[in-house]
Image (cartoon, rainbow, N blue to C red; front, side):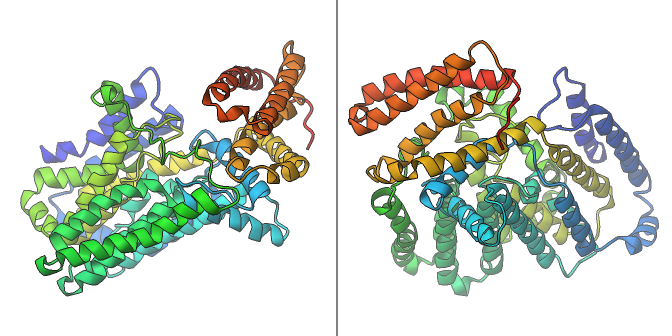
Length: 538
């Protein structure tokens, strides 16, 4: 029975491909997936057939296995050859546009949701431009993404160096989350690398009771640092509470609670206070999730659509490692109890629980596949725990090799597919960059004259109308073109007057304007979709 269970992933993939609408987590074509499916089902059956002949497997295969370092090296070359270029995954052009606009106007992008992520990407753009590289955030995002990807590989390889030919690296390579390291333009790469630093720290010190002070203070500092990279790390406070309950001696409980609270506050508060009140400009309070957290509607917590979304993200990000751990829990009870008795392994379950809560409670506003990266932070602790369980085994469990390579192959297919670009998106991005440079040159002086609390909000709205006018002029002629351009110009005048005269201090007046402006923006987006760019001024 348990061996038949190993075929469930193949059955699930087969079932998904037969659906009338192919799920988003299979970006490749059906023929490729079915060919891979047939190949690995045969491979799986072959290994299970020879399962009883251990000597055949041990002596015929194991001596020829490549080391994890060799596999990772070739995988890294693959990462370089196939960066993620599909702008429909993640925040896409909107993220790149916002980063470049704020970098040109204010020196760097900053938001309370992801302070260090956005600042570091902007600063790298400045450094690269000083060496005559183009001012394009795509370049800085790609470089930092690859740095994070190398770090993922290095940590897994370093921990597994004593058994270098056990294929354990495949638990990382078969997880869709590794695509964050494929030159991916998003604000989730560095925070994920920071999380891995935390897991590595916990791995080193959780099993050392004599160093409980260092464990608690170091963990607090790393969690606070990761919150500066992205506020989703706030769920790791659950891990800190667990550490305080189970790893703080009774006589030190109050001391640890007070000192850890002070340490975390000293790391976080200066940044939030500075950007909220003192920096010029201050943060735009209308665009931070810190003030308006997007929780999933309570009435839809228990719904078929919600669970379908959760399972889709789980499958895309980490299906093989999650299935492996579930299999061990189900069929290897004694081994599982022994494995999970390790304090660090228990702690990783708490991490998984913390980020699973995020995956359940957060409302992905862009939907899928765009928000796959935001909703699946549990991929790394699950992969890490499965990796450690595999290391815990006394020998290679050969029947899992087909599944490990199957999962890795699916990730490779996804990367190849997501490497393909849409020429229309590439042209639109080139024009958007030009519009940002033009806008910054024409409006930087006026924006600097505004109060510091208005600068970012004004610039975002004003550029929205400027860009709409700028790009609409370059579209092929269509009946509403002139009307749309005039509407954008009128909105810009009204937007500027609203700030100069102070009428937008009234939320009612602001909401009336935004309602009308939104209607125009919808028309612009529809025209952009329906018409080609015929007059690109690059």
